[in-house]
Length: 395
Image (cartoon, rainbow, N blue to C red; front, side, top):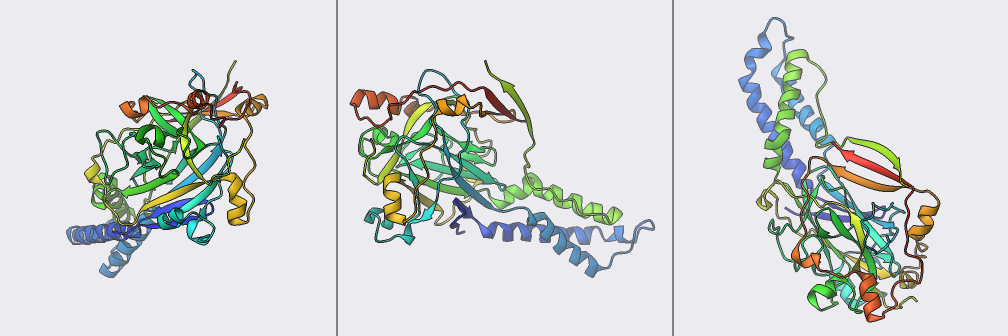
């Protein structure tokens, strides 16, 4: 099975079109068997007679309706955000300040380092010490691997082929809506913060001793369609078929795992010229990385579905693309002073991963900046006093 990777509207999308075809075959084969088994139902006195040709058309209609809202894709939106204070506090989730511009590397072949062109993929502009988070839009269940440099952002292990459950090296979608940083202990991450590669402060350099790759790697693994069929799609297909036979009613069709959030609010008392950027560890934030209830073998290995997302220093973006980079984001202190909201998310149904030994010991950018005297962080106040926190609870 092959994956298709595209960049549209500043989002990276990985799609698996063969999944729909495989599920459509499951639906049609199953209902054709039901058609033979349920023939006697067509002749009941209290039901309308249904011709075989009519039933065959209905089978195609149910297949189309069931799959119409099911997109076997995952979209990754790279969101700009506030850099939270790096202190002893565990902060709430900062807001999204809009998507980073995302462009194809192949569109600028003569203005980029040769290694970028060789790796291909996409690129985005980011300011030194700017923070980011990844937002996931996914309906069909998938395992999503995220690497920063050649280091897994979930486990801290070296990037490797395949999926692992011990330690888990992927996010579970659609259960995991966001990823803001590195899991350093259960329910706590350290924020993704951009830093120049080669200064010894990125997590890649801390764990491998080399600043070779930088950027972000994304790889998606879709759930085996047979498992998706057994876990719930077959039941919904049977419900639609039975409803039609019984009452000639409207087909029952629901998208898988629709989210139902309960929302409540509460009130709480020197730029570098290098192009290559990596991700360092910022302040502590409350966020759970969810444990997978399935096995790695439940997912399908697909070809050509890993994508590099290069982080281009904002100072070099206009020279490379001819487009101005986004302005620098506000500080967390300025944002809080204006009474703008922060966020908290809790999923009652999921179990959070505990920390991994490798990521638990990573040092923050602030700590390394002070120790190595790199002057990467700006000389601004590092405070945040949220006045409004919006809580999202997935029940």
